[in-house]
Amino acid sequence: MARKRDPQKVQAGLTGCKVGFYFTPEMVDALDQLVLDMKRMVEPQRRGAVSKSVVLQEGISMLVEDLKENGRESRLAKAFGVKP
Image (cartoon, rainbow, N blue to C red; front, side, top):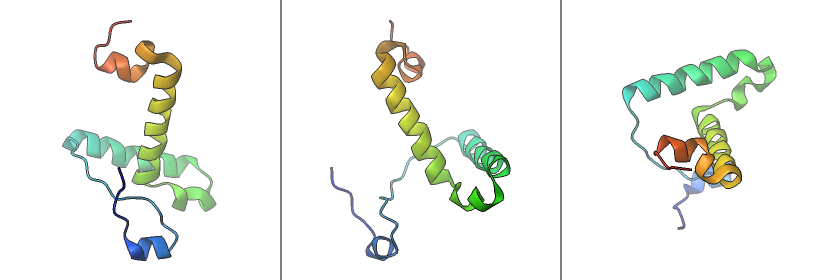
């Protein structure tokens, strides 16, 4: 499915698509804390690269890879109660 892109962001080199999701307040707090923790861990010159968007993209990429490699044994499948 094609997503609408903001022309100003495309021109600025930001080619991602904006999407919206609902999270519990606890999950938003956990994401905020995760970003802060990662910013503290990385080298000072790399801190600007750490954002909620990047953290979520990396997390989703890890879930996709895990699902491809482990199928019914993946963390995501187990979270949904999929039986091996």
